[in-house]
Image (cartoon, rainbow, N blue to C red):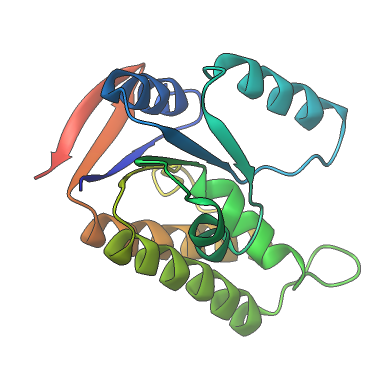
Length: 183
């Protein structure tokens, strides 16, 4: 079984690359979508993503507990595409925001993210399927000017590092072009 992580900046071509990779495999695909509808713009983005996927793929809406949900829904799928870790981490920390949305309980947020990543790594190690994991690289820009932004950047960076150590291959996308980083 092959495990692959595809990372890069916003609109770098990560999702398209991962979907093309999965389609070329010819294997039955379980698409694990981590996005949640929060507003009309996100609703439109989710709908556009749904339309871009082949009709034969099964979709699992998994904004949280992605590892557990994949285990429950894997069925005969031989390739799991998770899109994306960026939103999964955001979802995991969302319930630990202060009422005003400015502050965050860092320890509880980190514990929730680590629980998600541990569950996903458990899947990678035990489920007999290929995995494609899409994530953003958010550590290349400016340091966020607020605590929430810094906590999010740090936790996503930690999650990405843990996954990159676990997977067989890592690709970094730049302007739609994949650069193989690992091995």
